Image 1 (cartoon, rainbow, N blue to C red):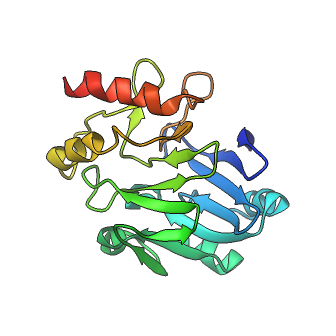
Image 2: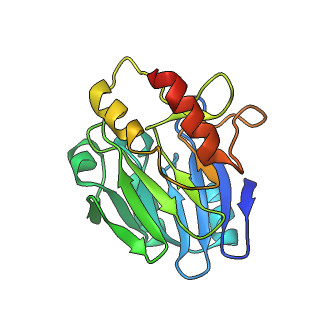
Length: 205
């Protein structure tokens, strides 16, 4: 489990996946505890590694693509599962909180609806500097390694993906993470907002 981002206010770890399966991450917030982003295959060993870093309070699913063994994770940790309401029927397992536009987990953690890759793709934004956005499958690393808009054969709506990408132009953040993560190739930040804006401008030109 690799530490990717560390500040006085929080830590973000890469937990598993990133190529064959969506990447999962652990966000450790001093006021909330542990937030597992995407649910990897459950194992007692992985659970123990997570619990060494924080007690899991929430499991955030940016889309149904990153949901594996959800109820096993819920049962083992007591964590609440969060996903956009439009993903609820696509996820095998229980969603405790259905997110919508404007949903917040705390004063400094909120959610951005970015439908298109799937009906209810949703990003999580950590607003404290250094600010981090976990985009899920909404964006993926391009040739430069920075996240951009990459079409997929099974996109739910490319038009909605484009609309969502246009809405990101004014967003300010320092680091960006997506469902795809390749150590040594994927670029996270700092300066992610400017780099991603440049990548999106080129993709939409």
